[in-house]
Structures are given as C-alpha cells and as structure tokens.
Length: 312
Image (cartoon, rainbow, N blue to C red; front, side):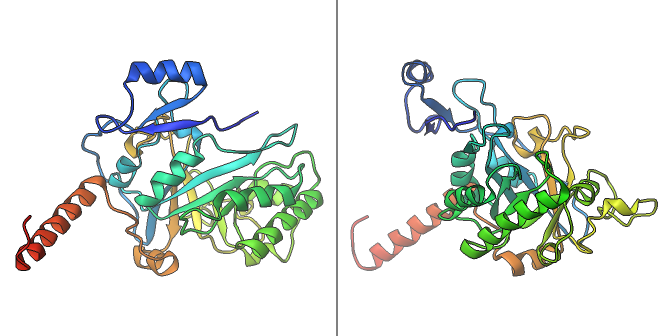
C-alpha cells in the first residue's frame, strides 16, 4: 500500500539540521528529512520542433526515495533544460484492495513546480474500483493547488472489465470531474483504447493526450502508420507523450530527474498558442532570476527612502 510519509524540506546551507541529525530523526520518528537537489551545472537546452511546446510528466519515480534524505526532482534544472510545462501525478488507487492514495512526491512537486512552470495534475485510473471515489479524491488533492493546465485522467488498464464496463466507469469519473472541477483530458494509447474502451459520444468532446514513443512528426498518420494508432474517438490531439522509458530515453538527468528516463511531452501548437490557452507560458522564475529581481527591488526601495530623507 502506498502512503505519503511525513517529510520536512531542508534547504542545504540555509535551514534545517545537519545530515547526521536528519538521519537519526528519520529513524526515530519515521520522518523523511528531504533536501532540495544539489546545485546543478550547465545544461543543454533541448531541441523542439516548430509549432510544439516541450514539457514533462513525472511521478515519484523521478525522485530517489530509497535514501535518507530523499532526493527530489530538480525543477530548476528541468526548466533550464527547456521544459515549458509539467504534469505531476497526484495519485491513484491500489489495484487489488482499492485503497486511494496520493503519489509519494505529490506534495513536494505540487509546492515547487508551479513556482517555475505552468503545472497540471494527472490521476492513474483503475476502472475496477469506485470511479466516484477516485474522482472525489483527485479533486480534493488538486482543487487548492496552483494549477494552470487541464487535469489528465490516465486510462491504460481495464481492471478485468469489458470495453463497455470500462467506458461506463470512466464516464462516471469524467462527469464527476466536469461537475465539480473541470472535464479532464484523456491520456491513453490508440491501440489500447480501441480494444479496451467502448465508444461514447462523450469522448470526442474531451481533449486527448496521446502516448506513442516515436521520433516522427505526428503521433499517428505518418507514412506507414497503422490506423489503430489513432484512438477512434479523436481526430486531433492536444498533448503527445512522445518519449519515455520504452525504450529508455536516458534523459532523466538532463531534465533534473533522479531516474534514468523521463516522460517528455509536446503541446500541439506554438508557445503563443500555449500562452493563449493557459496563460503566461513563462511560468515562474529561476532562483537566479528571483534573486536578481529582489536585489533590484531592494535598490528601488532604498532610492525611494533616500528621496524622502530616510536613513537606509
């Protein structure tokens, strides 16, 4: 059963106990003392095709959690490498017992990533468990976060149900999300969707995040592509997860992950299109940019104080 252990974020050289004390307290109190990633070196900005915006999607697999302290996803490095948005796994439900849980790294990622990048969240859906309870749990996790991107529902397992059964359960989840927050984007694979989810008029009205790991211009419709690569209920896609760990892309470190690989995504449009749809695509500022801005603000305040004859 996955549960989020309590943790305290420690900024090296700024706050918190020493490493030795952190380890001891983690043993004594079952508390993870989590250090922010070490300062990173120079990074290379990733190449992005025209009319695409590059992003990542992550979960606890992009952190290193088998050590004390936990080493988190380095969001500063992720942005420097060229990511313009991020999707973060909020949680799921256990396959057999049906226990709802939040992703181990949800709390950390949801606090840090939105300061740097436009962020959205996704839920790993299991249709063999209560879809209303799953939707409610997902809504409660993300409703008060600073998210800018449409939520995703990850649909890639059938839970032993028939295509009609999967479709019925998914529609309940989607309707609940739509009524209480907003309709989710469907994340899936074309061939899997066509075989495992019955068609519904609802699906075509939702946006699509398609998964297909190829270095081609489009996720489907390229010369030689089979028809089944396109989910039958869509003719357009909004997001494309085009590279991941099958086969391993080996680009985790490049984007600040502790894992060997990382999921890379495209938004279907230009940066201007992205900004029009989701707001300011620049997200937050890097640490160096925030420090520079604060220094300028301080100097302006000093100048204003001197103008009034105040001591500074």
